[in-house]
Image (cartoon, rainbow, N blue to C red):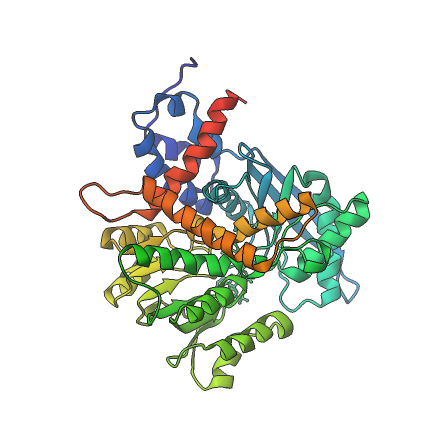
Length: 451
Ligand code: NDP
Ligand code: 2IT
């Protein structure tokens, strides 16, 4: 048996901070997991001796590269691209690509770390990774986006592969960008392979991948409510964001008979007390995916209020679905939600709640589905896209819908298995997700010995 120190949580976090200076998002993601995992492994020597969590919190590799492209004025632009391959103990690296001006190594390391636990929770054989670039697609022409995507893939292609690492979309990367990147991969390698997910249906994409993340977040909310004899039906819901995840979360809330009263983007939020009905949501889809406009236009179109520079959490609601970005619910906003009657939160976005806010939701004992459980429907259907690609088949929509629902039920139940709170019937889904995600990856790592 190897001999090593049994560090405690504080020593562990001091080490994480020392080795990753200034990477506050990464520290935050590791801290949230470590708090639960340290309790769980207190009496389990092997996880300590083999430094399992320490190894999970050290990415297998971080690749960073230059991405040059030419804009429509003929000026040369230089961006930085990354792929963070965090852990492939239970399957090929898997996780999205984010194109946003704010992207940096800390953000991608937190996302790749989270992805490792999330992918484990789905029950599918997928490791964790994330990548992207500090490229701002807003206001760029289609040809500029195409040239950027081609240049990005011209480096990325050597680090990915259908059995190695399979990227997908995230903020700023949707069907258009995946198409351009897949085309470039195929051109460089002369291989038609399932190297990306979220592809168009004509070239190997899967039905319901587009809807899966948002739908999944609402399925988890519904499961948590059903367990206490309640449902989404009739509930007032605050949703943030107006991108892929937010739109399909809102769509599923409507289908379940809930009422969505807010959507947002980085400029502010719209409040529509009448409810963002199915036809209004169709208008938002067109606004965001075809015209690529701003959510403030919704307020002009439908005669409701737009709150510039604000987030929706002061609007009174029973359910909240943050679906925009990390750290979009502060501690005080979490308190405001609870005080205004919010009984359930399901995180469509990754790490949308600051650590203080996580504490508020936990202490209030509301139904709180953390990101790695709540938004896992997206990557789960990506996993199903990989299976269809390798078998060279396409499953039907009703089969995939059922698989997504069953996957979210499985995730709920795995969280419940590990998230019990002593002396009560309450489930701490944060603890459940962290431990269930950890156990599968950790046990695979133990099986491999020290590698
Ligand atoms: P999109 O690019 O489709 O939409 C992002 C939305 O969030 C936009 O409304 C955007 O507004 C808003 N947003 C982005 N950054 C900020 C910011 N810094 N402040 C305020 N608003 C912001 O991305 P997705 O819908 O795909 O992703 C949303 C979240 O869901 C992310 O956290 C992502 O990691 C997570 N996620 C996505 C999955 C997927 O399958 N797509 C799967 C699992 C999680 P604006 O247009 O003004 O920038
Ligand atoms: O955060 C995520 O889970 C995603 N952006 C989707 C990843 C994927 O590989 O589908």
